Length: 239
Image 1 (cartoon, rainbow, N blue to C red):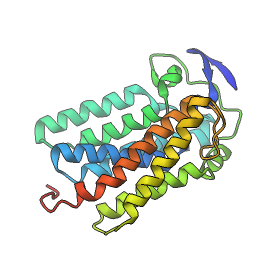
Image 2 (image 1 turned 90 degrees about the vertical axis):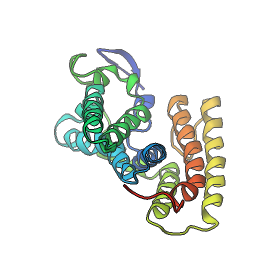
Image 3 (image 1 turned 90 degrees about the horizontal axis):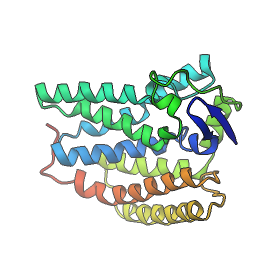
């Protein structure tokens, strides 16, 4: 399905492909947080990155449900991410705390996974004019549909597994088994992306969304495998 905005023709399936996948964003935030933890050694960056990874939806989805019938508005704009990044850089300059940068990095990861460049009217707001027209499919039904997709729950299991390690719980042999399973599912989704065929794991038939989902799942497989080594290192402690 294609609709017209001030930015031209946009493929709706690609544009909305990962918008509602909550645990995909959560997993991406965890991976961003792990990368920042490796840089600064502060465990607090992980929950801050996760918060940033879901913050655009926490702000825009209620606005969309109540007023705009469109789930990508102010917090999905590049201006919002740049503002947070500038504030985070200022905080780091004054206090050497990476928490603001972690929050901004999480927001940027959300916008990348949502393929926001495919919706320039929203991403470059307020410089691009009005937001796109309302989605003909109700936002709530769109959300509920995506929560029934198997890929959402694979992302959820990976997020919970890393979260358990973060909380100091031992996951034993479950981590490598989950990592291998995620790698298998990632290859499945990648095959669908390459061939342009429908994928039962995601419920999508577009190449763009499935490609991004496969990349996140591959990264998640690596993250699950390494979480125990990174977070379980006795020399690593929150500052």
